[in-house]
Image (cartoon, rainbow, N blue to C red; front, top):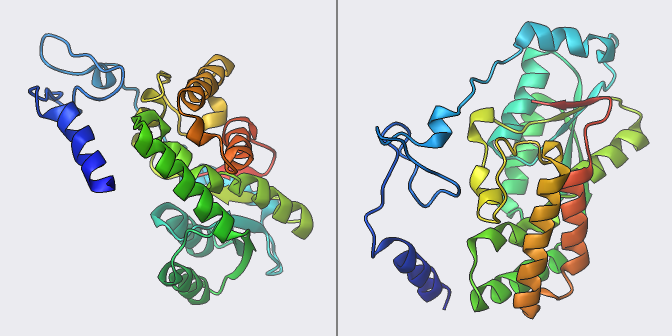
Length: 265
């Protein structure tokens, strides 16, 4: 059923039209809010602003007040085990020469191999790991319910709902911060050129840079919520036991803004 639905969605999107692409960055015409000039260059290229990195030396100055001189834990690194957070942990420990604690929010979606690899990296770096685990069985059931609901009425803008349950990472990181008394948290969010504009775009929300979702305008946050509310009404199967978890995930993602001691790499 899932395979047939994916094929049907692909067929409807691509089979009957010639897929135009940007002559510069090759983004397709299916990208939300895209348009092309006479040279075939898309608006995302023509409006692009160069990302200016503040650099290693500037970062060293910023973290100087937090640095421990006696080997005590002096920062927390949000660590999922993915590419971005793994490099962040390595960078904080081996390049910045700080004494981090790796914090992992386990929402039940990591495989045993992923858990093993996280532990291996922490052991190799000599870093302690704090794991906050919630009931993964419930989270997985929520995902299954929402996927089944999506299959009844597929819509690309609703796909992020499947992982709404992992968005509480900042909430739990701040609880660990409060409990340990460690004032600095690093969040490895990856390359700023990797802004996933389409995630909001397929929900009919246009924004230039959603890398930090709490930074987008209140109007766009309301538009995003309204889009989801409309989808929920059109497809009541979304109204299931995952609803409150999804609402809290939305709040954490869009409204838990930057605090003192938050460092987004």
